[in-house]
Image (cartoon, rainbow, N blue to C red; front, side):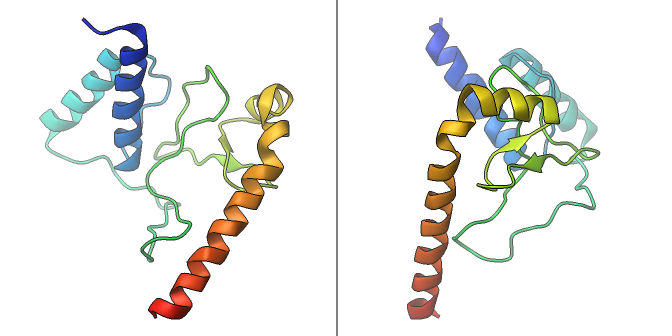
Length: 137
């Protein structure tokens, strides 16, 4: 049997992998529900459709989006889907939210303390990537 931390890790790993390959799992709160979605997709024989708004990353390395995002407010289980693209924090451009209400709640609870640091990290990574491109071609 798995311990609660192991269960959370398993759930997070499966959910992350599903979102990365554009399998939506909005509102799902358990590993069993995630597995049900995967089983349904396997039985259908067809992959989940790719939404028109989704842009594939043309470059290797550097900042890019791969797969669907999930709402970053703790205890929110919403994920992007074929029909719904999430908004990003206008300052750090890294954190996504399913709604304005989740954004406001998370801002007060924790994001306000981290936003500037996240934005600086994003800028530093972009500079490093651009520097690498200068020398690698």
